[in-house]
Image (cartoon, rainbow, N blue to C red; front, side, top):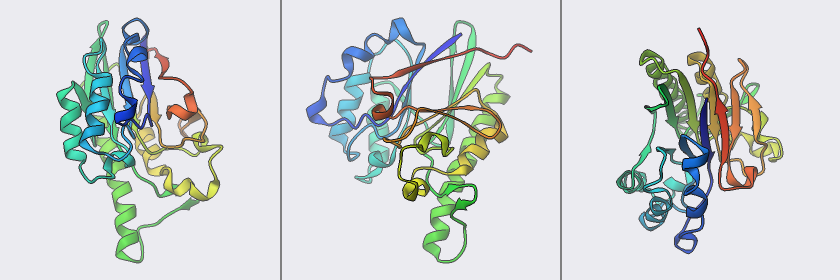
Length: 243
């Protein structure tokens, strides 16, 4: 059994220094890995990124993250990523990593993802260049996630987790106004997850949403936005499939 701790949308700034560290410091007893599902900062500044790094640096478990839309706001995602890396956080973007836990290889594939909506109510890559660019970015994120999940399968991972900021399914958006669902996620992410296969999908972004959902092929989806889970992190237990 692998214990996965996860949280997103912690939105840290200089005035929240030390806020989550006491809880994170207990992870060695509770989990095997910590996943951060984006919106780690308020505006994506280097100062805020350093606060995040201080909160999660040197923890007794590996820390793997994706960035969220807030982390892009200052247009410095590369610097945010480098600062987090200096504190030992591996930031994924259309990429993957694997950690070994008790003899099992646990793979995490990650992307920020993007919006566009869900089956029957989604944007199409048609018309103005701006609309085409919007949908193209969402598709590129999803394609990158699928490639990363496929790579983990090729590496022989016992468990695979999809980590995104934007939602892959509408289930976990229940509670959010339907009018903004197209800006909260995309069915393309779920298609990527189902196409490549995964044992768990974790996302954030939807503060008024619901924790639990499923893809069409039955992959468990969890919205770990902190306002949804109501605590420093949630812990999920995964069991590898026995062949």
